[in-house]
Amino acid sequence: MKKIALALFICLTFTGCGSFSSEPERDPALVQFEKDINTMCDSIASIDENINSISFSYEDEDAFSDAKDSLIEQLNLLEQEFVKFGEMDFPSDYDYLEEMADEASAYMTEAVNSYTLMYGDDAYTVNMEEYADENYARAYKRVNIILALLRGETPEEEGLTIQ
Image (cartoon, rainbow, N blue to C red; front, top):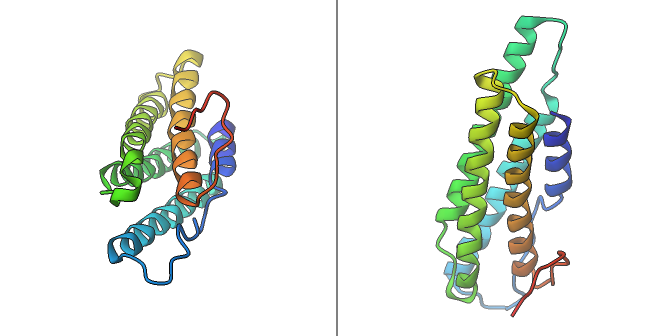
């Protein structure tokens, strides 16, 4: 659980994603895309807050069950945001990023499915947790790379090649 919260905290430093362009007269499609990205960032930040506010009490079985249910609910909301991100129509200047957005969505879906199985069906194993965490990290890594490129920054990720 702490790994999820830590990953969210680390990865959600992009709240208020910023402007992608400083052009005085901007393409309306680009303006709408920027609004959609910022809305997604705000939604993810809100979900992050909700996840971080979930208190797991291992001493009270009912409270623990409620916490697991809340976590699964928030993870499902997070997955919905990633699915919307993967379905976004990127403006032509950024269409090369669409495949990476699709990958982020797929990785988050797999992570949420794994977390749901672990926490919802009480099928916890260390291997399943590692698998879920890895998919979760891969999803966020792709989002962070996309956001950096949209802001005109060069992402500093090990093994990343930009052509």
